[in-house]
Amino acid sequence: TVSAFQFEEQFLASPEDLEKLRNEDGSLMFQQVPMVEIDGMKLAQTRAILNYIAAKYNLYGKDIKERALIDMYSEGMADLNEMIMHLPLCPPHEKDAKMTQIREKTTNRYFPAFEKVLKSHGQHYLVGNRLSRADIHLVELIYYIEEIDPSLMANFLLLKALKTRISNLPPVKKFLQPGSQRKPPVDAKALEEARKIVN
Amino acid sequence: MAAKPKLWYFPGRGRMESIRWLLAAAGVEFEEEFLETREQYEKLQKAQTTDGRLLFGQVPLVEIDGMMLTQTRAILSYLAAKYNLYGKDLKETLRINMYADGTQDLMVMIMTAAFKPPEEKEENIALIVTKAKTRYFPVFEKILKDHGEDFLVGNKFSWADVQLLEAILMVEELNASVLSDFPLLKAFKARISNIPTIKKFLQPGSQRKPPPDSRYVDVVRHVLQF
Image 1 (cartoon, each protein chain N blue to C red):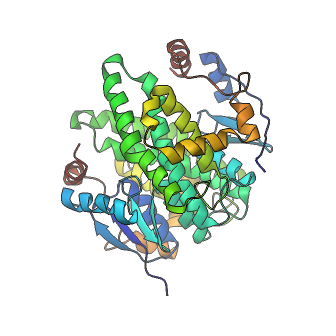
Image 2: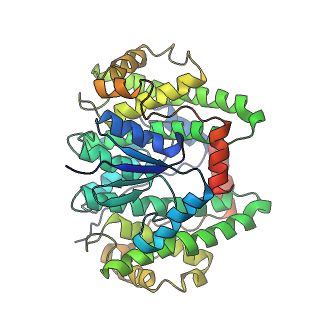
């Protein structure tokens, strides 16, 4: 079964919001967000949070070798995701170069690697013939790449099939529908607001 | 007896150093192959199409237990779990991850500073030392103070302790007095440095690498072509 976990969100809308959180004793370990409050703890560091959730909800493989593969794939995905995340932050004169880099890395480095993994074992999931966080992260990434340029997916038939399969899992399907907590792409206005808060 | 783990990286610290520390702390002997030419690197990358050596065309690369592992964090997590340095349950593993991620952020700042223009060096060092003293070290000083134990997590030596010692020593190389306001970290440093495997690693002639110098920066730039 796939987990269906409900969560609340608190949005930082002003510099004062972040400052308040920073001044709360023990809230932000390294004065940074994301922060997730779960199981009586306040968690910092995206990776640590993801690792905890994945392990807790059995999306982390059956042993340390499977976990190593899941981690390896997930870290590569995080690298590409970070490039995409930073794209809106690029000064206008650097945007084209950044976009070229994203396209190049997607089609020459990352997506061929994952397509090859799926091809090598012919299974429905990246690791251990079972759903793991790696599949979720990859599908998230595929959606972002398609937002940038759908033609980038042209040669990745197994990735496209993975995307369809994962998108049809009931909790994922629900998350992909309007009204869910999934967030839209960053727009210029939201970015400006975020800059004010962090600066 | 299993083959020794094998490491592929440039001849210096970079992202591989934390892996060397962890293997050394666990008392595991390892071999190293150093990438010093573009040709070596391309050869390793080309092998990707035949036996998947470099999944994303990048190093660090560690061959261990029949796997060719890349991605620093994946390698470190595997080693920590394999050598029982990752806590006794999910919550301890979580805390170790949080602390390790924090110290890694600090160490990556130092790592990337070596590649910045020389005229920015002083400013970068000052920023790193400030971050260490205001954002990172206070956190760990408080953790040690709150539980009064010898190690960061679960009253037992873990990967988090190895990372913190590594980070402390790296910052001290930039500013020798950085621990002056952190008495518990000073004691921690002395204590962890005296663990036999770590003590051995800290001695001259070990596989520990020196701080990055211009020669190292040149090799990396040459191999990665940037």
